[in-house]
Amino acid sequence: QKEVEQNSGPLSVPEGAIASLNCTYSDRGSQSFFWYRQYSGKSPELIMSIYSNGDKEDGRFTAQLNKASQYVSLLIRDSQPSDSATYLCAVNIKDNYGQNFVFGPGTRLSVLP
Amino acid sequence: SAVISQKPSRDICQRGTSLTIQCQVDSQVTMMFWYRQQPGQSLTLIATANQGSEATYESGFVIDKFPISRPNLTFSTLTVSNMSPEDSSIYLCSVVKIAKLNTEAFFGQGTRLTVV
Image 1 (cartoon, rainbow over the protein chains, first blue to last red):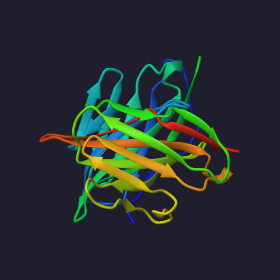
Image 2 (image 1 turned 90 degrees about the vertical axis):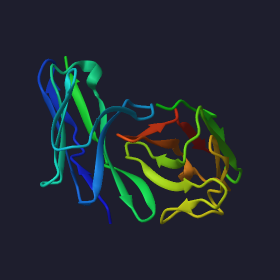
Image 3 (image 1 turned 45 degrees about the vertical axis):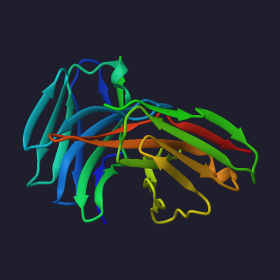
């Protein structure tokens, strides 16, 4: 069973703080890793992708990947109330049947003004 | 990227009836999926829509209840058959675009289904 685990939250941070979202995955064959943001009543939207070990920065967002520990995280700097949403970690796995995206349960983030 | 048009955006249906949800993509894609998301829950994969052959269903989902069509590489439909209130959920179409350097998944706007 290929699994992606996340803390369900809610994670509450004050405005301006750093929000840290964590994700672990079980399949060592995982190749690509993604963070999606989903506002209530909306569909998920891709905010970050990461493919190799280390950090990847995009504006206020930093994704961190450690394949040895099977761990991927998302840091949101200078958190804003508009960042309040559910963040889904997704892992792309390539196996004999093709490519498959496996989503974690999501972490609900609340940024308090 | 991919632009996905999913219809209808929402519907309220009587139990025992069926609803067909359409998903149209602005470019050809090999991989197309249907997900269900119940309130406060994460995404549950229903099936992979295969072009020219029967869909591949995940455990707990069957073709008689969720028939899927995929006549070409830009279009798919999901039907929720003989609906009951337990089928009330958001249904999402997703496509995966595979490029040399990266692979990304994109979602339609979702269909919010309420069965009464």
